[in-house]
Image 1 (tube, rainbow, N blue to C red):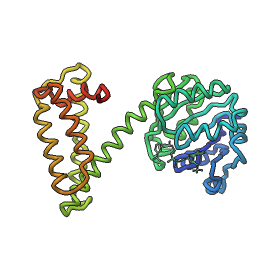
Image 2: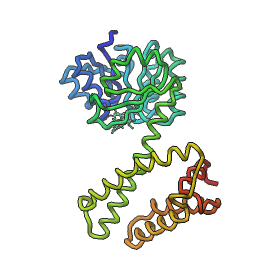
Image 3: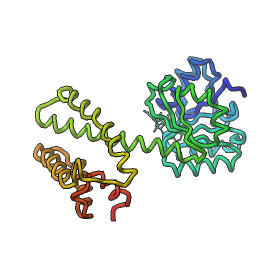
Image 4: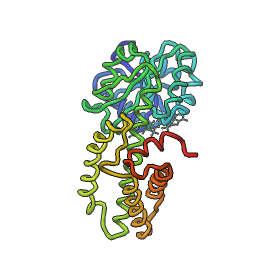
Length: 291
Ligand code: NDP
């Protein structure tokens, strides 16, 4: 096969967008999906629907996987394992770093090589120059396939040989994404309980979110130096503040799971004797799994 042809396995919103981006760039695209009907639009645009996963693998050396998780990969590729030899599997399915490492070994045992990927944009960002994906795995394989990878997202960031690293970077972003979005939902329900719409609080929500990068930068240096000075904020002050947040939500009669979890972390910091330190000292508390 040549560089201008690719197989895409998994046609959820992400896989469909990826296959579409390759078609837009003139690639010969072979696709396969458990639910064949999801390939219809792509076939209408010129993609070839393989009759099974083994033939999808046989069609091209470069194989993009966009499945729900790594278990879906095993379900898809185990019956086709004889066709894996010589293939480059670019696995863009999200999962844990350990699952990515195990899958790289599984692929190697079958004569294939895995590049792990963590895409940082939703389907609308696929094929865009400014979008970015983390990769890890063999550098030479990454370099060889870079032009194709840059069709998926214009920017790529190879983090190292360890196949878990791309998954790690992805999960670092996702822990922030999901908890931040939940914090926004909390703000929305608190507003709603008080007669305010999401639109009413949008400017305030955006301004609050935009203030966060300044805090990240300020604390990053101190955290890396292990210095949790209570000069600009103290954990005891923070504890009182997060209790006000919890009580405001409780008084409004809305769910308090999230603010209660925040209060619990501050309480553990206080119990560990950090009342006069910065609330960044919670980093030290959170480094250990709770007893
Ligand atoms: P979906 O979960 O919608 O797509 C899942 C794909 O996996 C479908 O093709 C589905 O097949 C297939 N699949 C699931 N389970 C199995 C199985 N047991 N056997 C065979 N095939 C299976 O995911 P998305 O397209 O939204 O995303 C793909 C990956 O990209 C996910 O890991 C996601 O976390 C990640 N991602 C998603 C983003 C997004 O905004 N959507 C952004 C960044 C990353 P079928 O059609 O038959 O159900």
